[in-house]
Image 1: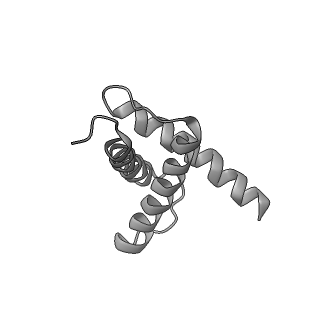
Image 2 (image 1 turned 120 degrees about the horizontal axis):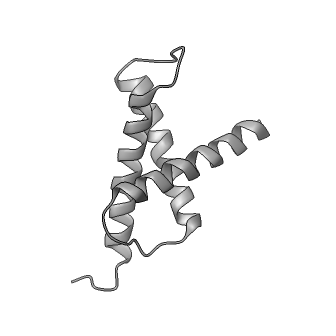
Length: 89
C-alpha cells in the first residue's frame, strides 16, 4: 500500500514536470501543485486508457497511456494557471 502511494507520487511528479515542459511559457506554480496536477493527470490518463479505451495492462511500456496522462496534466496546468493568474479579466 505504501509502495503504491509512493509510486503514484513519483509518477505524478514525472507527469507533472513533463506536462509543464510541453506548455510554452512560464507557469506561476510551485512544485507541490505540479505534483498534485501530475497525479490527477496520471489517474485520469489511466482511467481513460483502461476504462474508455479498454486496453488494460500490456507487457511493455504503455506510451499512449503516458501521452494521455501528460496531455491531461497539461490541460489541468493550463486551467490552474488561468484560474490563478493575476491578469484575469
